[in-house]
Image 1 (cartoon, one colour):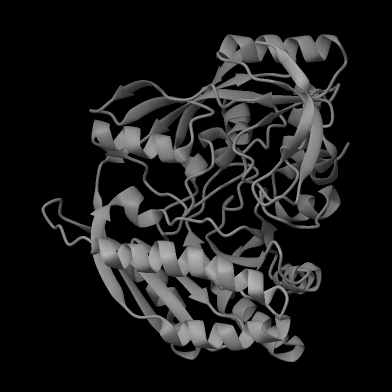
Image 2 (cartoon, helix red, strand yellow):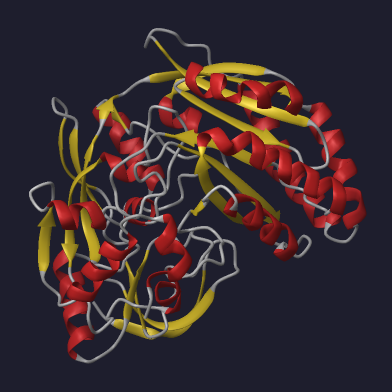
Length: 436
């Protein structure tokens, strides 16, 4: 393992960059060596996965620890569903490997570019009223603490286990994760256009009626697209025709949508009329596939995003207020607003800590209008409902405010003080959300 020269690094969206000396360990032992060396030299080091966070959680100001070599399954037990995975494994690689083993993740988000450790450490989730975030599926993990020591963390150490599953890279560097997986399963996806006024009054029913439910609202319109995913027997095989997949998911959702957004960046007044046309063009479709093929949608159009968890009973009020703001301001927002749901868990810094949530996510094209006013209005709306920010998505909250939203925030900070008193793993983002 060698240090490379400093070079410019950028996250996926391009809104976070740095220039740091990079280490690319090939084994967990080399990770421990790198952290130990950094601590001994009084330097700061940050792990990075795929760079799919929109916040600066992975930004490095001294040393970067690139974990892409730590990829693949270490061991798997098909009978128990327990699978040990190296931390830098991209979700798309993990999903395919699990499929070969006849296993699957209980739930996933709609993007599979993240590494397993990056996704779980920032609280990534999918949708489903009975399903918590991805980190809730962790039954153990290998952690290199800031002094360079390796520890296996599981329920036998409830304090560290409660904190480290969504650890923000602040308590140590995760090098291996043991997951509780399910036997592989198939889903039927039903995607339908609808009216916001028809869905909002019944959204709690929709959440509870399906294993997975999500909704997309088009700002400036009253139109939505719903997506419900439910289990089907293995023998049910009703695939989406290839021409339809290419038309909807590749051409319209990415190629055409990306080109339109580049044009709209120069003609912002046309954005909301475009949304009205796009929403009216949506049609229903239904298909079955293995779970990860239903969950994951190609995303090649770059954007920035903010997402907050609110108590699920507050979601209709949040969307109503956000719709009213868009109508007043007529902001040029070209991306739909995404709405999902998830079950509570017991992880200290999870957005789902002891609370069932609806998740509302707002987006803006990277070359589109300045999202500052839009995201600020969104934050003000969710603040009235004790909104908790996704750690990997844009927000402006600091440690003082976050300590009122996360009941175990103070316990997490105290544990960090014990494990990393010299702030070997710190950066400016962690200083803001946890305190210096």
